[in-house]
Image (cartoon, rainbow, N blue to C red; front, side, top):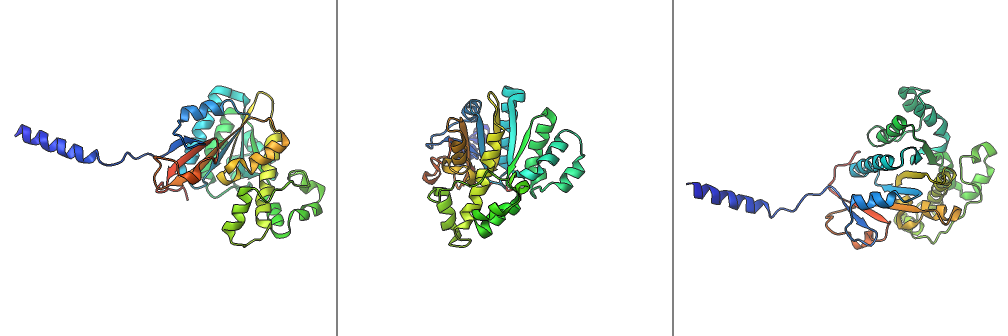
Length: 286
């Protein structure tokens, strides 16, 4: 009887071993070779700017952003700054007032232009900065000005009053329509939005890069959170940062979803210094 039970247990166990291991994420280097969080953290610690490209509704991205920020803080302490696409430059004063305890949470959440997933996905980062008295930079162009570019092109920004232009990267805006990201955006849109569609993306990239660069200090690092498209292929924010300071040490992280994450899909190679791959079946935050 004991032998029968033991044999049955072996057979059952053997059956389960045929199932694949379930991984929530896997990290690769840019060439597609399997890497590790330890390697990512080590390289991030050497960078002047860490550009963490996320998938906005992916919980693994948001969790790893927070974990990486915590670990970089353990290494750098007050030599670390945070910044994000999710905050527009004209909300910087309000953000600073909240971080410094001058306005309560309810006022901050009511008056700032927060994304719908702020409480679940970005509040932990802001609260970490608040707890440890770290600067948090609102880097993005006010959306009304990006919309203006979408409707009327870069030239329309010249008509804005000087007070408005202080929230935008200095004019005129450098622009290369041949960059892969901008060309792909036009192709994916199928002609909708015309040539101004990638220009609206570019004005965001340029303003985020300008905001980041304005806050760079020797011996200090910035970790910046944004949609992965803004830094994929070492373009977007990276392209503009390199124009501002070619020798800046920049580390990029791209995020992708794949059916299987054992290997990095060919199309996802060379997107960034490190690529975070997450199963497509992963629960979404919205």
